[in-house]
Image (cartoon, rainbow, N blue to C red; front, top):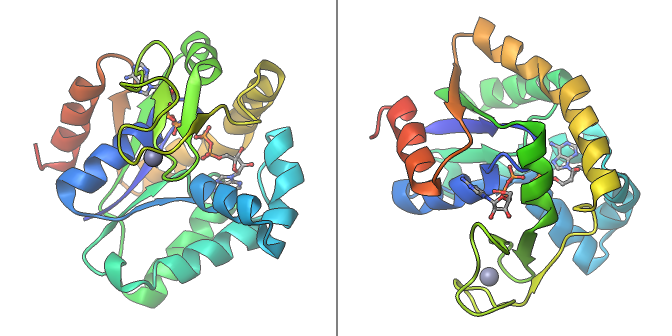
Length: 215
Ligand code: ADP
Ligand code: ADP
Ligand code: ZN
């Protein structure tokens, strides 16, 4: 199964992608996670992405499209994959179409997770991320068992630089301008399914699985 999780920052893409990856045995491919890992290592890619990420802007297409083109060739993607945070604009979606055509495969679904703006700010302001495995927590809604320690790997939890209110508002604008048009793009292709991103995490997982026909 090959599908995309689409939605504004804070919609729960990362949280759900991680659960679905485990349940369905598919790799979670998150451009944000890949870019943050490159930034941490201060690779040329990470240095190039840093200023865009900290400002809440999209990293240039050639950077992320290159990452995805390489990643999708991986042996672990043969049976399927979950794209989390890519594509984020119509040009990226067109580039993805080309990559998939070259690989002789196609998407099965695009799941659009909706959430209102107030909830986004509340979620992102309380988000904590694991430095080692990038698992996502929330200080109130989804706390780790032990404060600041990842339940999954024991790594240290931290607050992302871009999860500050001014940057959050900028990222919401980028979503509205560049990413939201993908809802129309994928509806036209008959791939879009809308899922409510608000509610209990486990209920949302159920709704996503139902939309994928695996529930
Ligand atoms: P995204 O990857 O779409 O930016 P995340 O999965 O990182 O979103 O979730 C954003 C924040 O909201 C995290 O702190 C996460 O723990 C929390 N969260 C995710 N799903 C829910 C939910 N259904 N209810 C409340 N909080 C949630
Ligand atoms: P969120 O979980 O809040 O949706 P991500 O972790 O997916 O955020 O992305 C963090 C940042 O990484 C984005 O604000 C952007 O700067 C960069 N980024 C991630 N994915 C892409 C992409 N597909 N295209 C361009 N930039 C991206
Ligand atoms: Zn961890």
